Image (tube, rainbow, N blue to C red; front, top):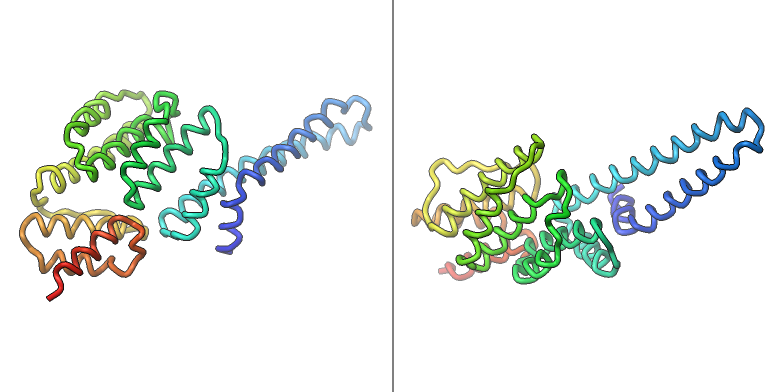
Length: 257
């Protein structure tokens, strides 16, 4: 099943084109339906509806698979997916979305300058509300700039983030969620202070790694290297292609007696 999901994700554009071609042919057939028997004219709309439904289901499945690959941190598949994205020539809204995705992936791999470089190419004002919007753009820029220690850029990014307005409840909830992490990153990486009773979600592998990484940083900020060591050890066995794992391993190696 996992191999099938991987194949679907890596060949998503070819599959999408095939399904769209089938739908297009079906529409052409429907336009000529006045020459068909009556029973066939009744069947054709049903066939068209099924094909449109299959296209919608395909988009839903691919999104789920992409999220699953990301959250489970299947590094090999993720690297292949990045390569596939970079090999394609996207346009318009689709180009903005994939530039943003690439930026977030390179951030995970610790290539923060590359992440920012890609974000600069995104026409963020054209990002739709929903899965990807200007809020996502500002938050990703904030995360990358924090790791680059671009302190002179961060305040401006936060001001743009805070001033972003939307009437959609989904955008309001997203903004509140991102704000909670901005407060955490501000405290841990900019103010270098401890957060009391820090509790984070661990309901996926990526969130688990991020949480224990931040717990370790929090421990270091209060001068508790023993707890930091425990937290870093919990994630040190995962791929050090991720910047959080790389930092954890480097810290543990430097602290070896």
